[in-house]
Image (cartoon, rainbow, N blue to C red):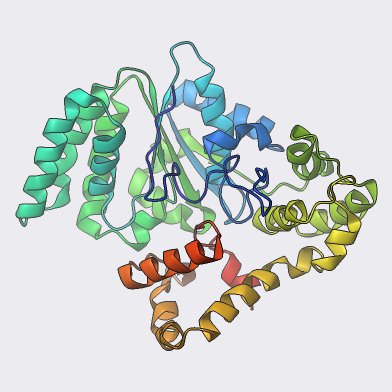
Amino acid sequence: MIVARETPGGAAGKGPVVGGAPATDGVVNPYPGLAAFRPAGHRFFFGRERDTERVLERLTASRLVSIVGRSGTGKSSLVAAGVVARLAERPGGFAYLPCEPQSSPFRQLAELLLRSGPLAARVELRAALLEHERSVVGEEHLAPAITAALRQMPQPALLLLDQFEELFICTPPASARGFRVLLDSLLAIDTLHIVLTLRSEFTARLLEWLGEDLLRASLLVLGPITSETALRAIITGPATALGVPVQPELLAALLPAAIAARGALPLIALTLERLYEQRHPEHGLTLAAYRRIGGLASAIGSVAADIDRLIEEDGELDAACPRLFAELATVIDQLPTRRIFDSPHLRHRGAAQRSAAGAPGGPAAPAGFPRRWR
C-alpha cells in the first residue's frame, strides 16, 4: 500500500501524475516533461537503477538519507518512482508521505498526516491545527501531534521532505530550529524512514542545520546522468513500455544532444514529451518530429513562447507580471533561487485558462531553469 497526499487537482504530490497524464490524443504520455515522476509512473522511470539501490542501502543502514544534487538532476523522481516502487514490493507494503516544508513545515506535515495518516490520530491532529489557527503560539507546538501520528502508522513509512532548501528560503528561523528538534524525535521511530532532497548549493546550510555527524552519515550525492546507456534507456524505455517505436534516426540525433546537455533531465524530458505528443501512428517517435520542434535546444523556447502568448493576451496579467516575477525570485547566500509566492487570484485564473485550453496543470520549472531561459 502506498499512501500519498492529494493535490487540489487530484494528483499525488507535486505536479501531474506521470502515467496518468493524457497526451493530446487522450493516450497516456509516459514522459514527464517538466513535472517530476510520481509513484504511479514507476514503469516509465529509467536510468537511475543503481542510484535507487544506493538510496535503499542507505535507508537500511541509517533510516535517514539526504539526497543532494543540482537542480534538474531528478532527486524527487528518484524517490517517488524509483525508491517508493521498490519499497512497495516489500511484504506488508510501505506508506509514502511526500511533503514540502515551504514556509510552515510543521503545518505542512500536520495537514499531510490529517489527510493520509492513521485515522486514530486525526482527532488529535485536527485539534492541534485548530488551536494553532486560533492562537499566536509558534507552529512547533504541532510537534507532539505529528510525532504521535507517525508512531501510529499501521505499516512502515517513508517520509519525503522534498525541496528541503525551502526550509532555508521560506521558513522563519525559529520554525526551522524547531523542525530540527522534531527530526530527532522522528528518527527515534523505528518504522519511519526519512529522505531529504536538497539543491547542492544549499549543502552548507544543511550542514549547519543537521550537524556534521548526521550529514556525513546520511549524505548521498546525486550527479547528472551522462552515461550513454542510461540516456538511451531514458529516451527509448518509456515509449517501448507502451509499444511505441523510437526511430533509429531520431536516437542517432537525440542521444548525442542529450549527452552534450550534461544531464539536463527536464530539458530532455520536455523534448521527449513533445515528441510523444507528435508521434507517428506507425513509426512512433521520429526524426521528422524532432526537427519540427527545433531539437533539444528549442524545447524551453517553445514553453516560453506559450507563456508569452498567454501574458500578451491578458492585459491584467501583463500588468501584474513585474511584481509577480520579483516575488518568485530571491537571493540566499549570494545564490539566485526561486521562492514560493501564493496568489489565489492568479492561481484561479491560471486554472481556468488551463481548463479552457484542455491542458493539465503543472509544477514550477526546476530552479536551474532561469539560468537557461533567457
